Length: 157
Image (cartoon, rainbow, N blue to C red; front, side):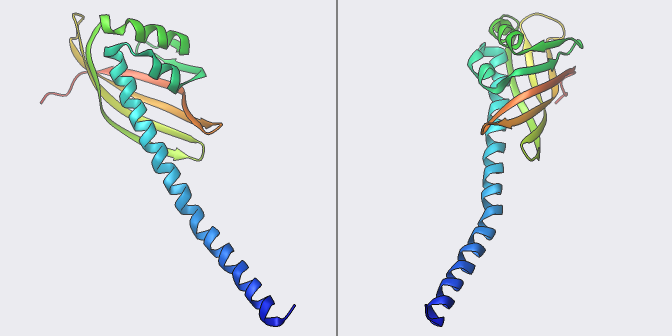
């Protein structure tokens, strides 16, 4: 092999390594942006499911080993969340996501937010859920493994 050929091979190698090195952070950033969009959309869908009774979103986003802490301090699992969602339109007229903030820690994310609801008859008639959900990426799929919910008064406008 000639010196010129060796230099061309070495130069090509250096360029490939440099391109790979500089593109990795961008891929990670794109991946995080995509995950953030997915989590935000899923949180919004979960909020809407309280009034619609759509259990498909619950089955998709909650991990099989999910554990939640309800507003009364009791624990619930995925099966109970699905059953409660199926029945919730009897109690709730509407529920919608107000805001969510997400922080990433590798294959984990913490989503904190709140949503406003209106009940059919129970007191209080209006209020907000304030919550923290812990998301984990397993086998390339983001799911909630833990949740904690509070009820607080609706903000006056």
